[in-house]
Amino acid sequence: GNIRVVFNWGFFTNENSRNSQQAGIFSGIIGSLLTILCCMAVALPIGIASGLYLQELAPKNWFINFLEVNINNLAAIPSIIYGLLGAAIYINVFDWPRSSSLVAGFTLALFILPTIVISTRSALNNIPQTIRDAAIALGASPMQAVFHHVIPIAIPGIMTGVILAIARALGETAPLIMIGMMAFIIETASGVLD
Image (spheres, rainbow, N blue to C red):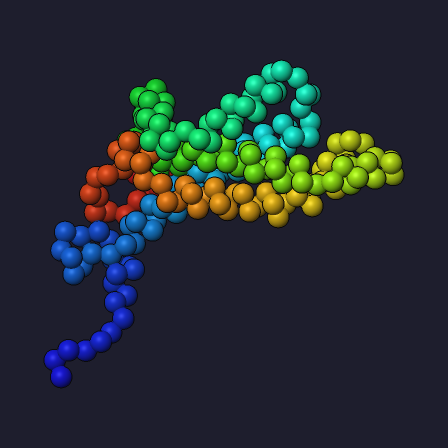
């Protein structure tokens, strides 16, 4: 009668602690949320707009082909390289606080940006040309055909790529170790600069 089974709510609500019985994951959850919010705020608009421009609006010339090849190559670079790039740019050049969610979010945004661009281009490429032709035949401009017809049809494919990219960012630790997010910090972050 000395042992009772209860749900350990403290595991979800307590901060980090050196005492294992009092330790919780609340600080980790808040830090992950702040990091992913910073990452999404940067990567989503830039990645989707870049993919849209490259697939639908950019002229087909040698420079665009050069960009497309380099974006595909960036998707194959190991994540540790993005950590080194984030440390060099955000910490050394911009002098942002080390181990902050802002630096982590921007570093992970660099990491998932090629994936979002590629998935956006792929989703837009899968829309049949007849959709564009039909919209233009009914009097829409090429820009209206893209924004009123093609993009709404491509949104599920774009969102699938975005969700996969964000899940990939959530699982990465190598870039975060390179920017100094390996310290034991007891307090919960109250903002992106903590």
